[in-house]
Amino acid sequence: MRPSLLFLFLFLTNFLFAQIVDYGNNESAGNYYNVRGIKIYTEEYGKGKPLILLHGNGGNISSFSGIIPYFSKSYRTIAIDSRAHGKSEDTGDSLSFEMMADDVASLIDQMKIDSAYVIGWSDGGIIALEIAMRHPEKVIKLASTGANLWPDLPEHPKSTTLGFTKFKPWYTY
Image (cartoon, rainbow, N blue to C red):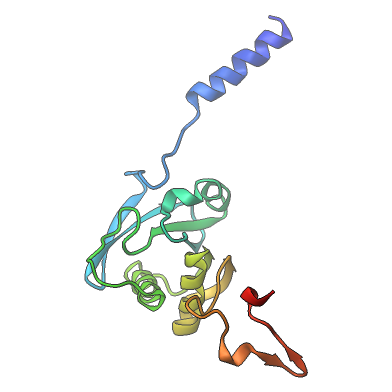
């Protein structure tokens, strides 16, 4: 067999028989937990120390489809659909980052996990920061990106001066 045909055969065989995971809709990895009066949907992959993944606003577990395979090689990777997102329930109540941080802390308890690594981006990053502030015993280490601590304020009063430097709000530049 010519090398180019062999390569094509191996590529197609690998492509056709590769396991395609539908993250966010994987029944074999998915589970619902009753947390603080609602059902929270999670998917778990891999073994090791627990790592929690928190998506951004309007997202769901599928937002992490690019990194779940990587982290699940070394960690018990737990991807969560936040309250009112993905397959988790929306009770119609108002939402707050504090509420969703408390949801995750309660979920950690229900899963019988002492503490976990936490990765969050965008609103998931804000939730991760809130977990670290409200429930520091639940967080081993934290990585947060695209987050802000005071999302509703253009400028926090405590951050306007640092020594002799006066900071301008982002909208004045």
